[in-house]
Length: 256
Image (cartoon, rainbow, N blue to C red; front, top):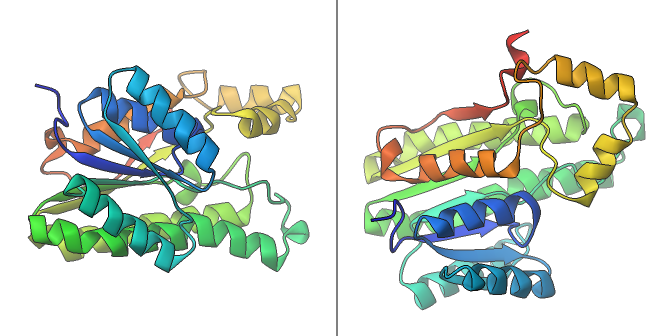
């Protein structure tokens, strides 16, 4: 039997990139995966791709920064699929905002905090009543090494947002463990998941790329499948006594 057989897993920001890799890994372990994103065309393509693999998948357009939208979509998922057993708060990133402090405007700060942190909060707030009713559930927030260290490809708004994501995770783990709900986070380092990340990495000077690589004991960047594997583990019963932790998937980067 697969590890997530018959469980419903909602993954935000999952029509492409890291989110899609996570959704695929969950689906391969038997979960009924719900693709949520803001682009309907990309959602449909992701769902079709998963179904072509023989997986169970559905898709719902959703803007994580809008509470009413999140509440409505989660209620629809519960109605259509019967439960929400797993939530992966993946929507986020640096969102093409400036890296340098003096270049960051209020609109950049608000965008990054709203998508990364407020979005995760809204999603947790929406699904927790269903998980409490079921007396079980697993939430995995996608953080980043930047959340408790520093960033290489993003600025202070991103590091602040991810620190908040980890704080949200710890508090919810403490508050809702009594209901059989586990809340954890996965923190990747630099992972090339799409054109935006390719451009960010490619725009780094060769010397800077080499410096980052030398700071990683495994001497390579992570792959999306490796982040996804950590999410599957934390969502599964293999992690049944693990809650309130951030699992670093960083190749040992800050050991030096």
